[in-house]
Image 1 (tube, rainbow, N blue to C red):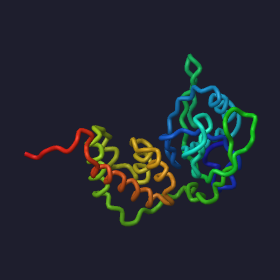
Image 2: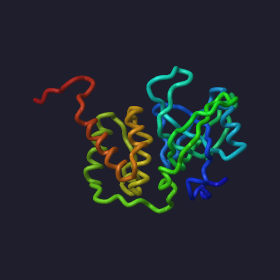
Image 3: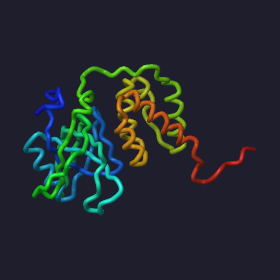
Image 4: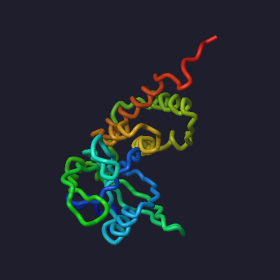
Length: 221
């Protein structure tokens, strides 16, 4: 089923397999590459490729055990849009984010991977094909915070592409790609609107610039 048919929350599956992976953030419209090697998730990919290709990417929260951690309350459904298999049996896939959902009841299932009921309705706006308006966004402030963040961490991006990219696409790719802590990524996921996510991302970048460097304070001559 092509992603274009998902126009309403009711078009999406009520039950979805989930892939708990801390630090891996999927947002609507974003593309997340994954390397699958655990047998239970290889099984999951086999099953979804024979169906609607939908997987819920979810982070964990405190509690549970290592093999069955508690799940965060908000996750994002993605559709497998790229698939290849390596000679040693791993799957290389890409998930394209479709819509966030509330993680509901976990089902008792025979599959080795976990499945939950998904409530997409609170995030139905994720399915809108129209670009969301971001009022009064200070792009200069955002760019300055981003440059300081990247310099501190000795990271780099393609600035020409970043400066010409639509703001929503830029915020999505940076939220997914920058090395934030899992709790910070969850906060970005749960931001109600793209405008809220812009504000949250800017705040995270600015907070980072206020933290002391790992090698301690530097004297100024």
